[in-house]
Image (tube, rainbow, N blue to C red; front, side, top):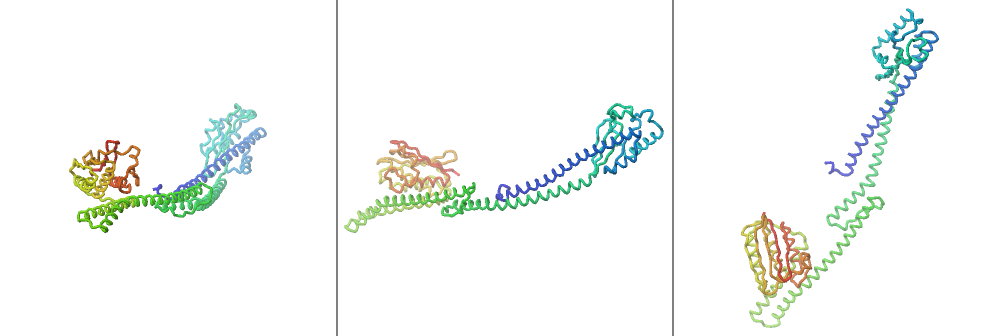
Length: 481
């Protein structure tokens, strides 16, 4: 179905979905890219804030030997953190003996209970020592371990990189996500606008630069295909491929028109020359017969002979005219119906017998096939008569022509053979060409050309075999069904 669409429809159905896919893909990739950048920035921000908290806690422990909750509240406010708390395990701190007392234990226990109330998330960081990030709908929660440094060993009896605590920091993302969505939508709208603008401009240029020249070429092609070589096409003056194609096509049209006119003039001249040359002999015979009848007082037998000569000359002229008409019209319609093969051969033999006897050529008919096959009776008989009439030109007095028919597989094969002089080798490939005569034969040189056209129009084939001094054989194969 797509193959049968117009070129403009094919381009529309191809590029519009591509534009839509481009916009959707651009929108999706833009959001994903901005979200990834946002998460990376949020993680970096969480690391920075966790570092500030850790430094503050370390400094407080070194100076005050305790962590002040007020400091943590201030860090939340100053850092813009929605939720900041420290998860600890009292037995994991390994405080020095001189720092252990009931007040500190109670404060540590309170912080642990506050963290436990938040859930179990982050406990695995104590064991792994790796940061953990959890994406929420409106924020990202960073769980970052506080690892012991050398100065931490002042208050804690732990090795370096031992996890003393875990900072839970929530970085808000709601406003950032809203900004990203707005930016993506704006980008999509801009992209859609450019796509529509590009499509409109593309359609304009397509119609003016491609569709219009192609339509002109298509109209010219249809007109020339119908034989109208006088069609004046709109030739593009541009130097692009379509312009060059248009100009070349118009040159081809003009060349074809000139060739057609030259061929017509040549053909008309050739036909006129053949008519004049070949009509002279029968016309001369007619004039001679009429003159002898008018000037003298011939006997009845002589008068009858002169009238027969004039009548035969008229018949010959009529046959030449009919051959010319049948061949040059090019409209050779056949009406096939079941025909009796022996009847066809008998009809042909009766039609040519008188002319053959006048030329002292014998005729033999071999009825090897007795059935019926679909043929145009009149036209196939005309073809066989033309072949016989042509063959006579190469048969000296006393020669013979044989008509035969026989079945061969799904075909009926007719053979028209003679024992004449044969056709010279240099002429055999051209005997079926119109207006071609190699001997002083009667007619216009259309006998075999017309016979070949009649046979092929009925689904048959014709072949010729000839050898100088041994005769010629025409083989006509016609389908039985």
